[in-house]
Length: 553
Ligand code: FBP
Image (tube, rainbow, N blue to C red; front, side, top):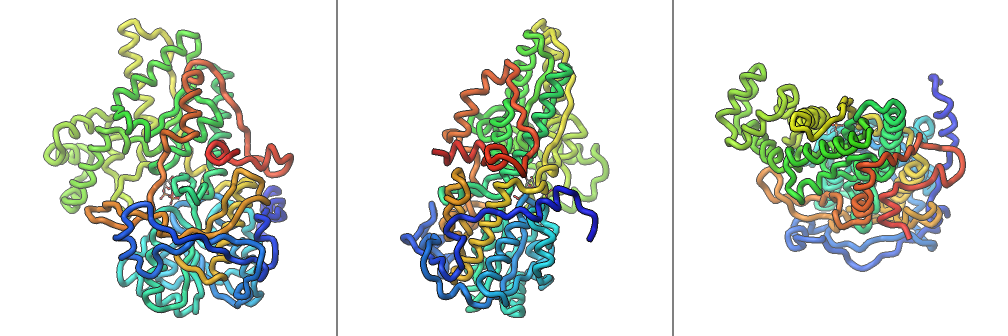
């Protein structure tokens, strides 16, 4: 066996906890249904688009009889989108469920994301393979990818793969876009008259695949705890040396759930929440002035150090930058060939003079060159700017330094400002899953098996009551169409799962808003330390503060 760390060896032996309802033999776990569900909005359009799968009832597993659970099954699994800690345990939970139902059932892993399903690129996952990945981070058991299955050819190829392998089901582990894809695939499979069911599993460290029935997506717990450890370490360092401000950008494509959770865990002086910036229409100048004021007031107390947290997606929520990005996306898509021929930043800047409105051009020119160039970098497969590649933390640190210079000249600031910038993102996506994520993911995978074994399609695996100990969790499925609405994407109305942004009237934001005034000025850091896997439950098994505030008693 290849060299492995002592922790990895110890984690192999960890037995994830299942909800009490899933601990029996599958044949003794019955599925019970609630009433029919409906989409939050745009019911009529969605009903038409999902004629075969719309409006099914929510399902929950209880003690009882499930005669179909012993059927021999063939199931394929796809890991889709960005990595999130716990993905391997979803696969392990699904595998163990399948084998518990019938030892001859088989699990196929589609390689490198949805393209594996389209191209019939797969590997059979056996017990030996699964055992080498239990309770570990990463998606490397089969790889992941961001391909969308949307063209007629891709759908026909997916149907052909399902038929070739005689699949009873495909389980798609992904975020809002991937599960939108899962819903469409379920509908297409049903329309093609094949028996293959489709079940989704809610994944993303961003925490924005969430609803009344989906309390949190997996990976958010471990990723935020990993970042909070690093932020706490920076806080302790700066509280010791007392000479630096640290500007930390935190991953999260759009929503600020990660930044908010990390702030609740570590009490920084500043934490921007993109959703609030948008609601208050705060300009870049406004944001910079607010941060500089905190720096200056701390300097008056003799504290020339601190920590500021910045959500990755911020730039898309600042009104004038949002407008700039929209104009850039448009111009770069419309004149793609002409734009691609331009070489060098100056040529591109000159081109923008003709293709941007005057206010957007002024915004572009106000951004330091090296960072402005990042706004012109390649778009993602959906045509969006890749916010993880924009150094917003550097942009803000530079702008704050400039503002403090002005304030110094006006006699309004007498301190010293020296800033370091950081980006915490990839560091947290493949960490060893926390006990919470290890248990939650295993339960989600096992629940996906139970949904498949119960003959359901177009459902999202749902494990709830997560603020309580695992034994008290409940398991079931939510029809994917219940999470959908119609949204404009690239000029067309499309059915999509609604992204859950930070609710400004929600308990986590309110708790933060009530405390941030104190945290801004006083040094009131909290040091969470590294994720603990072995030890007392109050240290090792706690869910995030977001989950406790939203779902706790
Ligand atoms: P998912 O929504 O697919 O889970 O990915 C989220 C994310 O980790 C974001 O936080 C980040 O902006 C993005 O992926 C980075 O994408 P990539 O892995 O392609 O660099």
